[in-house]
Length: 383
Image (cartoon, rainbow, N blue to C red; front, side, top):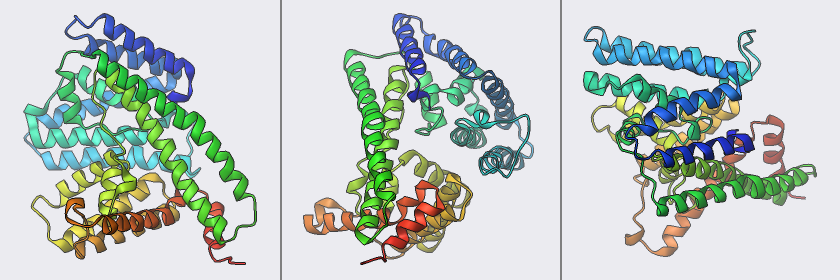
C-alpha cells in the first residue's frame, strides 16, 4: 500500500538521504529508523501509530520476560504465541470477513498486521531458545517490528538476521545504491505498468462466456499477474530496505524453474514458506522426522499457509491441495531434482508439470467464489 503513495515514496527517499548524510554517526540507523517509522505511521494514520506503539511495547514486554524467566518458560512461550494468533491473527481475518465488528477498530488498524504477527512470533521463538543471550534493546525490537519497507506485505524478516544487521554500521556504496535503485524501478514498473495492463485484459476476458481455451488462458494469465504483482512489491521492498542499511531477503528465486512442488515453495514467496517450515518443524519435530511424519507436517504447513491467506473454504482446499502434493513427493522421494545429474528434457518436463499443478490452483488467490467456479466450470465447456 505504501508504495502506491507518492508521499510515502518521497518520505522513504528522504530517510535514505538522511542516513547517507549521517553515516559517520555510529548509531544513525538504529536511532533515526525508529524515529522515522513512528513519524511515518503517525502521518499515515494517528490511530495506526498508537495501535502499533502499544502492540510493540506489549510484545516487547513479553519478549523480555521470556528471555529472563526460568519458570514456566514453555507455558509462557505458548501463551504469548497463542495470544497473538488468537487475539490478532484471528481478529484480523474475522474483521475482514465482516464477522467481527467493534467501534474501536477499523480496516486501517490491521494494515500489515498479518505479516507483523509472524515477526513477533519469530522473536518469541528466539527468546525461548536463547534466553538471556537473546535479549535486545527496545529500540532494536521496535525497529524490527515497525520496519517500513516490509511493513505491509513482507518479505518476512528473520529476527536473528535483522539484529545482526542492526549491529553493523550504515554502509551503502555506489554499487549497492545503483543495484537497489534499479530494483525499485523494476518493481514499480511491474506493479504500475505490467500488472495494470494485464488486469485489464483479465477482466475483459472474464466478461465473456467461458470455454476451455478461455478458462485455461485466464488461469495462466492470472498466475502471471500474481507473480508480477507480488514479485514487484518484493523488488521495491528489497531495494528500499537495503538502501536503509538492512538486508531484506529474496522472496522469489526463479520459481518457474522449480522441478517439484517442494522446490517451488522454497522459491515462491520463499520467506513465508521458510517461516512456516522453520517454526512448525522446530516445534513439532526437533529431530530429523521420518518420511511419513515429514509428509504429514507438509500438509499441516500448507493448510496453515492457506488459512493464513484467509478463513475460507477456497483457501482451505488450496492448502490441502498443495499439502497433499508435497506429501506425495516426499513419500515417493521426488522432492528434489539435481539438474546436473538428469537430462535437460527430464528437468524441464518436471518444471512444466510443477507449473501446471500450480496454475490449476492459483486462481483461488482471486478470493472470489464466483470467479473461481466460473473459470473451473469453463474448463469443461468444450463447445
